[in-house]
Length: 308
Image (cartoon, rainbow, N blue to C red; front, side, top):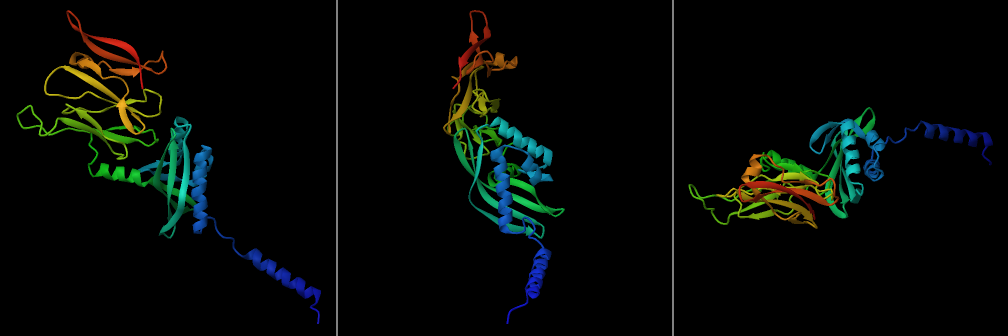
């Protein structure tokens, strides 16, 4: 017996109604959807645009340890893209998800960042919160930044530490000097009289300074246009007004002198004379100001020298 045509039509209509009334899967409700959101965030870095990020971010984001509004987060991203035109970010490996609460999900992944032809991996995470029916980024950070901030909170980073981007990865670090111990009431060190400049990012090598019992590192800014801040130091010693001023730059993960040590006298420092700055008239050169003994006096002179 043949099934009446009208009965088949009726079954099809019922099926269509049922399927049409079936609620569609809400965006970002499953693990795969969160992975899509993370990949969208990542692709926005490759495109170096703020529109996608604006759609992904909440109005307020805990951005690498600091609470910021959406506009400020995007401004920081665009500034990074402008400062680092060769910036490249990729996600390597799997993206894992964990539910923090009924309306918050954390996504963990490894981002691979390439700057100045140097590549570094960061264990990172984004935390999403459901706001007005949509999943928005409320936290963005990585474990390296979290570790640095934790160390700072515990007092591992001294108050006198200087801030800068010393390795050119687009993330600021802190640098400070660790001096040797001095014997009480004596001009003598306990052990070697060596100091070390250390960094909150422990992947950056220390700088060893021999015959130095103190001093505060200077962030000299990017003197050689390699998108990394150079470091300066006037080492302290027991006696003498004559001191060499040292300037270092990081090359191939090794600290080298950006210029030869600059001979200075305390007269120069008391007068507030800046020891080094970019020579705006000659590309690849800097102006150094040094002290020199004449027949009658100690004078400060200036000359232009190439920088490494």
